[in-house]
Length: 552
Image: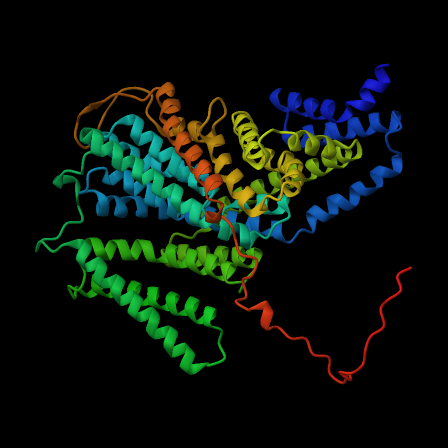
């Protein structure tokens, strides 16, 4: 009786055992391996499969180690670690804060903009939240920003590293769903920018309803001002026009010099050279005082163009098929080294810390992947994939019902598990059911990617909450600039601050479900009309008929 029950329910018992191990706090990689090996032994004892079944395990582990797509993870991690340690975040927050400072809610917009840019360059949530928390939060509290709004904007903007390409989690999702990383990046771009816009809209609405919660910077706090009263935004627009004209000029010149160069290559190189011209103009104007640009325009261009150019090169080459994600990551890491070197901020300490953090994250991912292969082999052996697929396909409501259930499960698990753990454990079980329902896997992956952002903002184990707690003052303190006494921030206030942005992420998921075209990628990236393709076999008589093959 007991044996029959175990055989019949081996898959749900195995899955429940894994959840129990994880909730008890055991390391994920070892929990996966231990549960997989124990139930493999139980399956052999119950004659569910033979010992030969485990002979597939070495091949599955070697497949992880030889997966070239996963090589992009250490490259992008190294790129982000170097840029983060080179002081780029500090420069961006200070300069963009000055640009938006005169506007009501300007510091909130600056944090969101910088958070999006850091997401595209560093891709590290911890680095973004901690950097902006240390630099922007004291300024926001100093000039009267509501602490709920300030901490919430910083945490939510930091989590954009989850969904803005080149995101590491998108690489993992693409790998687990069996999709192209480049397509996943393309699919995530518009939703990621839309979510960023939702954050900015939220700040705008709150500052419109209650102007006192997000005041503009007072004149004495704006150190990048113009003595002659010039408007900074005007010179920025002039410089942007120069970059556009320069880009088009280089694009045209490259076509004349090399008519055989692909149009996409010309666009990439032309735009990059155009940015370089704008950057050079700003540098020369600052050095020789030509008076072409305002102080704020010079600062913004000098700080903003290098990381933007790097992101454009990395993502542009991946999107246009010039480079694979792994090659794009390698180019990004090399570019980050050059940027840090050009700013004279690259030294042995920065390099060793960046390499150390990259090695730690890569080893963490590799061990979880190996553990997930051990678990999944046994889980498939006891027909666990069929159990999960049948369970999900029985969900009422068809595709919509399936998506609602899956998002609720992922959201709940995000309160307790890291996004890597969810991606490696749950996504391979969801993919077959999604395919059976005819769901586009790119669209599905982007929805899950946005949902997984909430795992950073939901208690009890939201990492962005912990990062924010580590850099916020818990006790009252005296501001060193204004001399005002500022009340400390309680842990409960930090938790409360993330709720509004979790709601915004849920709204973005709902928008994606309602409008799947926002994340749907066309299968044809070549621009070739398949109806015009002709296949000609040289030397074959057109009157010759091939006999049908006898397959019996």
